[in-house]
Each structure stands twice: as structure tokens, then as C-alpha cells.
Image 1 (cartoon, helix red, strand yellow):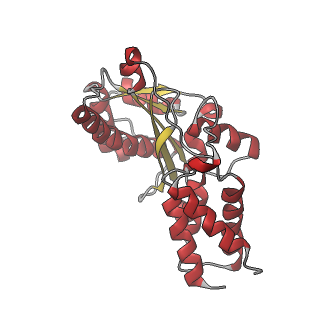
Image 2 (cartoon, helix red, strand yellow; image 1 turned 30 degrees about the vertical axis):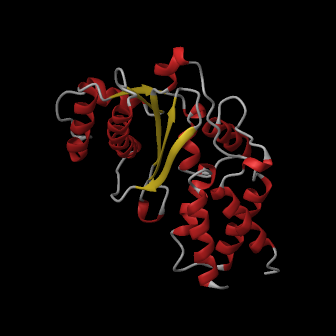
Image 3 (tube, helix red, strand yellow; image 1 turned 90 degrees about the vertical axis):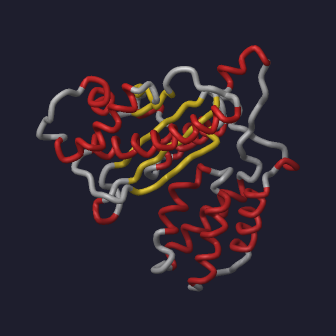
Length: 260
């Protein structure tokens, strides 16, 4: 197997993530193996390429609304999720995604592994929420500079009820959280400052879940449609395929033409 070809293909897939967040988890998993890739990894990479080739008209679509609902249409929303100890060395994978307007396409998605080990799913979820909140602070400042002031706290959805309770009602230094109380107190301060508001969402409805772990096809398609658009899955006409996706399609064609 050609390691250089594998790394070049991974680079193109990472480039395509700008408009194809649905391949984020698979791509990041394979990119972590760039220096020790196997034939099985190349097979998995080609599978992503085939998927992109078959869905090359899929992309982010932003639709303009009326001037009357500009405040609603430009309000920032965020989702976060974590998969506890699911990676090598018991590291956790977290996923975050953001949309402008509650039902708009998610313009920014991240699938990353936490650098530190966590001892519980709640601690992993807190790590994901902290990552999302840091992005929220930056985005709120950017939106303010663009003239789209964010009225009230930004809603951050999570499927971990314990995290919501800790960030809103916690007082004291319980022995089960004392080892990550610094991060917890930082999160509490952002809630108290009106920067973010944590809302519980059932795991079955959590779109960020697809950024943290492999999923059954039905659930993956449900979350993919939500990431791109709640109504239409943002199927664009062939002549509107983005340059990012076009590069991925070229990659797919070159890989699929390789008999090996």
C-alpha cells in the first residue's frame, strides 16, 4: 500500500470537511492512522470516497428570510456530544456543531478527541460542552462585530442531563466531581454570565452524535439531514457543487479507478 497516496487522500478529505461535516468522524479516525496505515485503512478510505461520489450534490444551503425575522434568523445555536473512552488509550471523542437559526444548516462542525482521559461520561460531556462554549464566545464576538447582536444566552444542547444539573444547580465540592471542578466552575461562570444556556436533548435527536461514533444507517441519515438542513437535506443542483466537494469527487474518481 502506498502510504504517500493515503496521506494525500486524507488531506483532500480534510479539505472537504468544510462543506461535508457528515464524514468528519470517519475522516478524523483514518487521519489518526496516517503514519501506520494498513490495507484495511485504505479500504475504509475508498469507502468514504464512494460515499462522496454517490452524494456529490449534497451540501450546505442557506436560504434568506424576510427582513422582519432577521433577529431569529441570525441567532446562534449549538449542539455538543461525547463518546466516553471510545478511542485508544481510553480517550473520549467529542463532537460540536453550530447553526444560524434553529433550523438552519450547521455551518461549523468539529469532531475531535479530548487530550485528557476522563473518568465518567459526564466529565466527557463537560469537556465537549467546554469546547463548544469556547467557540460560542468567539462566534458571539464575531457576530457582534458584524452587527448581529446575540440577545440573551446562546442555547447549547446536550444529551447528558447530569451536565445540565451540574452547570445550573451545583454547589459544593462533591467527591465525584472534585477532580474536574476547575472546568466545571468555568462552565458555571459562563452560564451565570448569560453567555450560554444548557438545554437537555434526548440522545436519539442529537445531531452531534454522528460526529463522535459510528451509527446505524437510519440514525446516521437522520442526523446527516439535520446537519445539512431540517427540511430538504440541502440537495443542491449539480452545477452548484462546491469546490470543496468537487475536490473530494476528483479524489473519489482517482481512488475508484485504482484496481487495488
